[in-house]
Length: 285
Image (cartoon, rainbow, N blue to C red; front, side):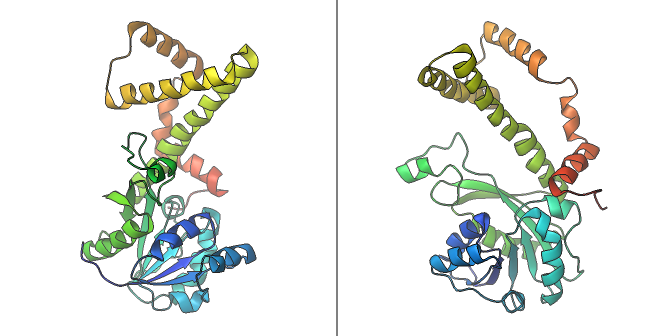
């Protein structure tokens, strides 16, 4: 992709994701403006050696405006800043929920994009200690990103991808989907399912230790190794599960999983979980 210098405004630059994004963009050749309202966020931003800019001034001539603020704040923040943007500016959010729910302030002459990091794969071949320690991504371990650009304009997509690759660096690939597809990836696939399963594994570990009485080092060692085997066999087909294991898996499915669990991939259920996450009465269409 052709390198070009852009003017990029990061709104919420002192927040959790704002700091991560800013750390990477600070190393780029772009003209980056950092905006933060909270005193604690302002302190974090200046402590990192970055200069704060007034929001309206920062976005007035920006090519890309990154809204690194919580989902519940995207509506009012976009209502305040989108009217100040030049035509053709790309408004980039980090999660699809607000875009899917149509909470962003709309202008026909503005481009809207969403980009979410995939985080380094559990199967990533990590070659350095820095990569091993970077489980979240954006520091040393390569990761993919998934993005959506509502207009589908190839030129704007190229500009958005340039920024996405830099703010989530190091990035292996950027996968382009629709906003709705991205909403099914996050939250449905990775939060409703994967993160829930991760928390369930910890609950099972605690039961094994505190209810059954297995020493924690033994239980933790057994679980960590078998999680890798389960993922490798289940997601990559590295080895077949044994017949006895398949029987145990069927028992687990009957005891733990509801028969209608796949209904979470229905549109009304996507709306349901997003309403809960965003504290909405209804999803706007």
